Length: 204
Length: 355
Image (cartoon, rainbow over all chains, first blue to last red; front, side, top):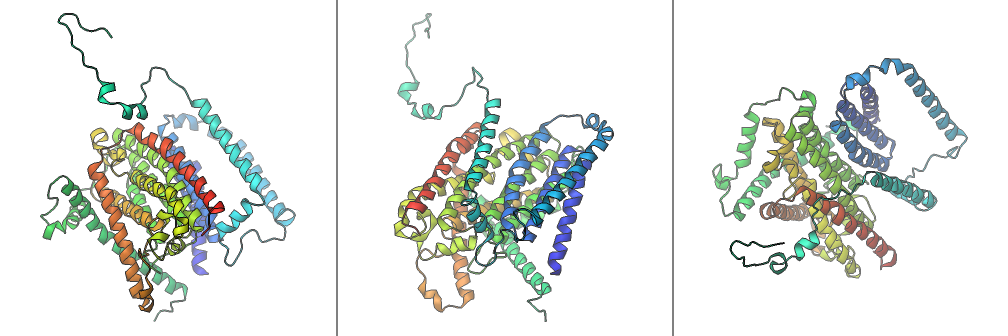
């Protein structure tokens, strides 16, 4: 359909341009904003492919959570980016080499999976008819791949606990609010009436 | 005559639907804004806006004209492009979310089958308008406000997400239209009461607290008092909005109100049956489809107004939270509670009487 073609070229062009802008923008905050644009238009491409569940999850996880924290950190950093940029021309050949290598690898993997691997001959887990996208993924994920799914969750949990353990510091002498104690306080327990003799004061 | 089945016809119909929703939303917003101020004034025993038009009914339109005609000031040190983009992002996202809202039987711009996820995705994007605005202003107060807002919105999204999961578990669908349809037939089928008649009533023990958590999280998500720390005027002047004037400021305000209305609509759809009447409606079977739609829309709009009234009352009577209290409430109270509720509702769906 013509509308779909227009939408595809629009989204694909936005993704590519935003991707290029991520590495060419002078200001790192602009880079992150372009990255978000790239994520968002990639989600649009997923919708065009009929993978609307994946598209929404991409937006929720990457754009809504990961990129926010990313933006957060980049805004807080006080880095002299002109100095960082000086060596970039020198490292350009290495970067280009890595990029080229990765592209070749990805093409090889994609081609071999499509022609010789698990996906050979199958049209992928996108069912037609009454079963929706999200339902189909759920049925595969929580039955055939239940263990892998849980292991992936555990890996994330371990990483999260690791990050918390590494950064958690219990500073001494910090006054913390204890809501339970606060609400349990009554005039009787929080207040003491004393009669002070003149010139003597009270000792704690 | 246009062929309605062709791509051109589809485009015309869709644009028409979008315009209809937008015009309805903007018009009702003008009066919701006024209602907000009137309720606030009523609690304080003031009269509120009462000069422009009868009972001050035209106050919002006067405000609109005032904002549009004011001078637009862009700070010299601001990042001009991002500065102007921020309110546009806020505004677009706030209204984009309404695309999947089922307003009445058959009245929905786009009935996608991952509607709930779409709403969740769009509302999680809402934070960008605020962060971009705060950062691009290149000033201390807006920046602090935007950092607070980022932390706050990310925190409360987690509990909103878990509460939505409980509703999805009860309904078994990600489509908002299906969620509403399943709650038909009377208030005892609403998700707030376990969603599935009397035999599912024990689930209400979990779902009523979940409704309350959703309501409070919605207050935090929309930066509404008592969680309006991003714009706390006593600490940050006006937070991320300090440097904004004229139309960009107006866009921020409209986006905020649209988000509040979205949350009101979402509470009524997820927990209180959306456009379903609270009693069985066999008498509508002989009505024309348009009449049935208007009947449903009336219920939906009524529920929305009720929750907006609650939002306004909370603004009037609850004092502002301190920042660490806000974080404590989000992470240490709501997150564990909603997580436990997800487990409880899952168990109920597996071992309970079923739907």
